[in-house]
Image 1 (cartoon, one colour):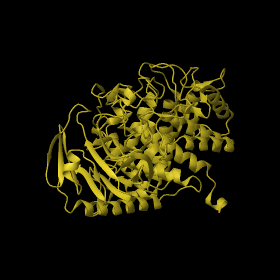
Image 2: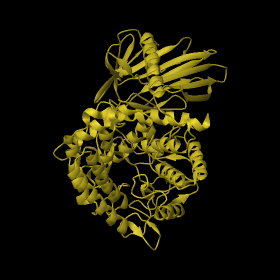
Image 3: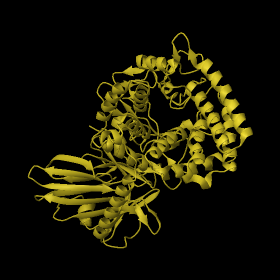
Image 4: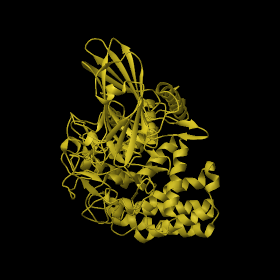
Length: 594
């Protein structure tokens, strides 16, 4: 049965998902939000006719899959019933070349015989226009061209072209290289090129992970989460996508199927914050470039919650009828209507992300009054809208309220502007923003607190609870030992807890009552337990969450709290951020451990 036990490979330009039998089931080209030329993940069938790229081992009986340590290179070992063993190596090239990063639109496979006399079959079946169009094929002596409506791909290989064209079995008696990429001629033989790409890509990832400041405990989990977050960054512009897929439902047949291949300013802030805690500063710097470009446009004062990875403002949402959906659970959506929504927390998300520019000496060239003044425009907008209704961070489509989280993020924008102004010795602006922040804080604190329930609620004057209230301490709105925060944590765990998992909210919305837990909310809960003195409970819940990852150490957006099956778009950056933040908070220090 189709599931999310998938490996992610990529190079910060493209990404692909590989299942445990070495089938590439999802890959959008020429970039994250492109046409999924491999789309069998949404075909509705375990044995689709097309939309994939696989290696079949004749008589195959068993497979194992793992990442090479500290890299984004995945190996799948296939074993047949007669002792034949084949290793399939998948990666997307990424390394420094001629003073810049080489990250082509390219997927590389190596087939390596390890034992016996294995017979394999390579099946390359791309599709175009979201599964609607089959390619036209032409070929030469060492390559096959797949001409799709908006893209031409070239597979260059030292395997038999005839065997691949006719999908015939052949004995794998030597290492075979397959390079799928743009319609360009390789400058050397496939074997030499692939070996060079493999060595340099391995070196890149090993060097990158070597520079991370990881905690003493849970190192493998943190490194895998960090690599995954890095793979979800579009390096060309600095955008950070929420996930590489579209339309994996949040729960079976729920209709909660969304396209996550875009940059949510809120999610991206949490991603770059987590990577920066590990010392991966380049991602933050690239993202800051992305948001500064957005904030300085004519429309920058009125930020959207989500943008395209090039900074596109319009992401019109449509339903694709040519793909049935994950396990046949449509609809399949392209684009995201959330770009039209008002989500007032975005002003805080941008200001919080940009604040580091002014305090981190490594960004000294970007730290000036002109940048601060551009951020003040966002602060002014935050003041205007902090107490106005919006769709909230969960993007309700059928209602608007004055959401507490949105209001607190508007306060956070003013609070951070006051800190930045003081740091810049802009005394008048510091007094202005401090007074403004204090005024908003008092008003939010009064209107978001519910005396009858004894907690902060989802919206002003409301009775519903929302897991985002667990972030009030993280945002410095309340102290972790404030009795009101302690009682809010207890109220949320009673109302939203499902075993060791947490719903984001429990009240019915446009699609009915939520069924599955939202993984990032469970990590927020873990952090809240830790800061309120319940550290051992936090460690237990964290270990439980780690056990829910798939076989490659990845998490999706949602999880069934009973069966622990993963649901929702995959891998989800929010969820991987949770792993990093909780591990950093809960781990014993290196000094205490050694």
